Image (cartoon, rainbow, N blue to C red; front, side):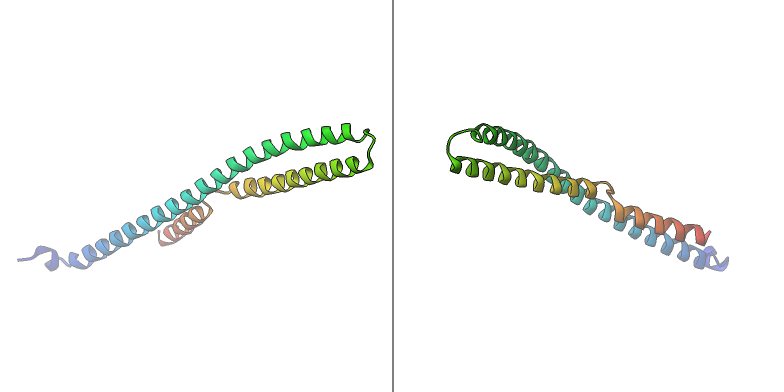
Length: 131
C-alpha cells in the first residue's frame, strides 16, 4: 500500500521535485553565466595590463622625442625643425590614442559581472513575489 498517494502527498512531492529540478537548472545557468563573465573580465584585465605597459613606453618615448625636438629646434637647418616636430607630434598622437583606449578599458571594467548581477536581482524579485 502506498501511503503517500493515499494521503494525497504525491502531488505535493511532485511539485517539490519539479521546483528543486528547476532551481538546480537555474543555479547551473547562473554559474555558467558567472564563468563566462569572469573570462570576459579576465580578458579585459589582460588588455588593461598591456595598455598600461604600452602607455608607459609611449610616454617615455614621447618625452624623449619632445626633448630632442626642443634641442633640434635651435639647430641651423629648417628641415631639421620640421622633421623633429613632426616626429614629436606623431609620438604625442600615439600617446593620446593609447591614453584614450586605456580610459575606455578602465570604464568597461568599472561594472564587472553586470549580467550575473542583473539575473540574480531578477531571480530575487521573482522569489520575493512568490513568497
